[in-house]
Image 1 (cartoon, one colour):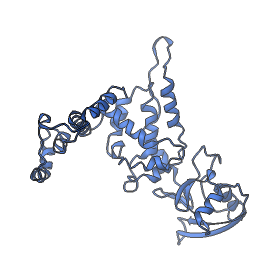
Image 2: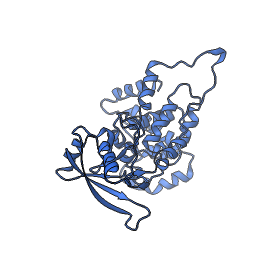
Image 3: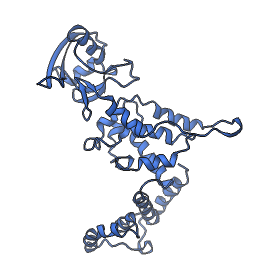
Image 4: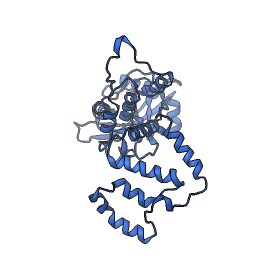
Length: 322
């Protein structure tokens, strides 16, 4: 089967820097895009640079853009690439948002390792007394195994809308690594870890867009795991006071009467004793007051229909020990 690739070449030492080149190869009908790339390098252009490792979908090294979309190329059939190309050449380009070393080869240090190192994804624990063991439930182990199935392909990070505007954001890949140790019952640094992740460009910068989960080929659901760390941080009162205050005010309002009091939410998020923060809200408060949005004690709020059902949901969540 003859297939043509249009590859975006990048050479930091050349004047052109970036150029597109086309290569045509004859490959097996069951070949992957990575198989074809290796064939191009071996038969036509030995200078073509890209990352590859296991060729079986375990290492995540061979991630790149195929026809404009991120893909693990060893798990992407050439036939699928041809369909996406719509009768044209299969277009290959390096990942966006990532520093490129050469051609399709990205800088793994800035893409992965620096951020992974920042979250310290290793268990720190003390030995149990008298030769006892650290026992974890099957449910916990299964959950951690799912998080550990991450191959570091980085597709979640390439889909992240926050990294689009701030490349220093830890990102869903590193936060999934953090989840693995935060929810490991053997680890004795849970609150400390949550506080560090609550700093700027940490887990609270996630915008809940679910793009990370949409892009994950292993269905690890990185976005849901970030939510779980948010919940754990709230229950451990870890991180910035405004975050904890925001949750408590939001929950108290909705749990009590089934609806959100936006005026109180803004004030209680800053904190009643935070004069500087409250003054910052003053212009907004004046405008809100003119629109009738004035904070009032909960006792003056009428309960909305279904408020009791909402309260039961809160009671169930707050009592499940997450």
